[in-house]
Image 1 (cartoon, rainbow, N blue to C red):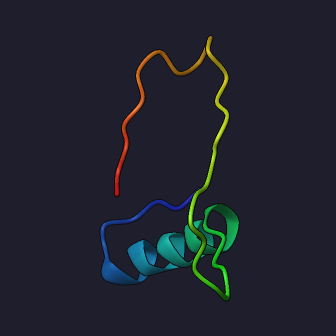
Image 2 (image 1 turned 180 degrees about the vertical axis):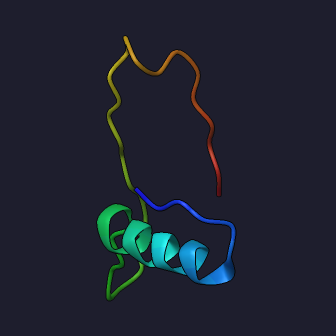
Length: 48
Protein backbone atom coordinates (compact mmCIF):
# COMPACT_ATOMS: atom_id res chain seq x y z
CA UNK A 1 0.00 0.00 0.00
CA UNK A 2 1.32 3.40 -0.93
CA UNK A 3 -0.09 6.50 0.73
CA UNK A 4 0.93 10.03 -0.07
CA UNK A 5 0.27 13.00 -2.26
CA UNK A 6 3.75 13.49 -3.70
CA UNK A 7 5.37 12.39 -6.93
CA UNK A 8 7.79 9.96 -5.25
CA UNK A 9 4.93 7.99 -3.67
CA UNK A 10 3.19 7.78 -7.05
CA UNK A 11 6.34 6.66 -8.83
CA UNK A 12 7.08 4.02 -6.17
CA UNK A 13 3.56 2.61 -6.57
CA UNK A 14 3.83 2.69 -10.37
CA UNK A 15 7.12 0.75 -10.28
CA UNK A 16 5.62 -1.86 -7.96
CA UNK A 17 2.56 -2.20 -10.21
CA UNK A 18 4.77 -2.62 -13.28
CA UNK A 19 6.77 -5.37 -11.58
CA UNK A 20 3.67 -7.22 -10.31
CA UNK A 21 1.09 -6.72 -13.07
CA UNK A 22 2.83 -6.31 -16.43
CA UNK A 23 4.46 -9.08 -18.47
CA UNK A 24 6.78 -7.78 -21.15
CA UNK A 25 7.59 -10.10 -24.04
CA UNK A 26 10.77 -10.11 -26.11
CA UNK A 27 8.91 -10.71 -29.38
CA UNK A 28 5.51 -9.50 -30.61
CA UNK A 29 2.72 -12.07 -30.51
CA UNK A 30 -0.11 -12.39 -32.98
CA UNK A 31 -2.88 -13.21 -30.51
CA UNK A 32 -3.34 -13.44 -26.76
CA UNK A 33 -6.33 -15.16 -25.18
CA UNK A 34 -7.22 -14.26 -21.60
CA UNK A 35 -9.71 -16.08 -19.42
CA UNK A 36 -11.51 -14.21 -16.66
CA UNK A 37 -13.73 -15.36 -13.84
CA UNK A 38 -17.33 -14.81 -14.93
CA UNK A 39 -18.54 -14.13 -11.40
CA UNK A 40 -16.07 -11.25 -11.00
CA UNK A 41 -16.03 -9.76 -14.49
CA UNK A 42 -19.50 -9.07 -15.83
CA UNK A 43 -18.31 -6.70 -18.54
CA UNK A 44 -15.08 -6.74 -20.54
CA UNK A 45 -13.17 -4.13 -22.46
CA UNK A 46 -11.11 -4.85 -25.54
CA UNK A 47 -8.15 -2.75 -26.63
CA UNK A 48 -6.10 -3.09 -29.80
